Structure formats: structure tokens, C-alpha cells
Length: 183
Image (cartoon, rainbow, N blue to C red):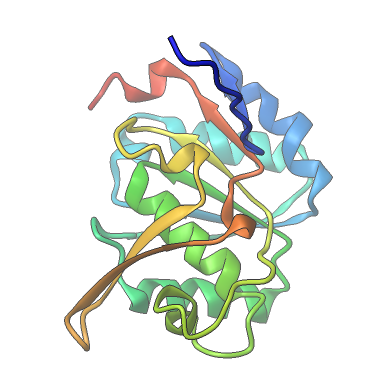
């Protein structure tokens, strides 16, 4: 067997009931939070209400970007970046699977970039900073909850690119298997 060393800057919080840890993580980054999620599954299974309840207990101001689609689109990234810049967002919380998390990574980097986020995805520019973000995983499939990579689709140009940056690692990821039962 080969020896190896593994290092990852994402703090993994695993186990039943670990959503409670939001109270120990989110306040480190600010009071203005953008909650990013996909379709209605987190509303149907009660996770949305739980997340909102925890965020309200922390006296955060919550803004939302819902409807992140599979194979997240640049247009959705643009919406998120606009919210971040207009509202002074300090932290993003992705609640979902790989597509939601990938979209959040692009939003986090795009919010700190003066140009179009597509420049970062196509590597015309380098993401040198990003808003901090965390994740609440609902579908374990892509590893996006603990890596810096992301895949974004530009429907206008019919292009889809994978990209990443050392600044787009989640600060933390909550992996509660209960949140994946409905998959």
C-alpha cells in the first residue's frame, strides 16, 4: 500500500442532527446570508423550514435564490451575483446537491469579481477571492461539497465548462444522512 497525505480546507460536519451546527459556523462570516437552493424538494421534506429557523435564530438577514437547475446556468449565476452585490451579502449557504453547490461556487467568486462570472469559468480571468460559503448536502454524488470544482452551462453560447479555484472550497459542509433519505 502506498503512503499518502490528504489535506482539504473544507470542514466536514457529519451525522444525524448536525444542522444544529449552523449556529456555530454561519455567524463567523456575517449577518447577510444568501440561501441558494434548487426545486421544491427541500420545502416538501421540511429541510427549508429547518434551515430558515436556524438562520433566524442567529439574527441573520436571509435572501434567497431558488430554482437552481440541474447543470446550473450562467443566467442563474448572474442572478445570484446581482443579489450579492445589491444586498451586500456576506455569506452564501447552498442547500442541495452538486448543481446547487456548483452554482454557489460561481456566485461566490463572481460576487468578488468586477467582470462577468463567465470570464472565471472560461479562465479568461482568475478568481482571486470569493465570498465565503457553506453547504447543507441533500444528494451525495458529485463531491462538490468538499472540492473547489464547479460546472456551469452557458445556454446562450451552448457551452459547458468545468472550472475551479482554490478560493471556491466550501468553508464547511453539513452531511446529515437524514437529508438524503428522500433521494
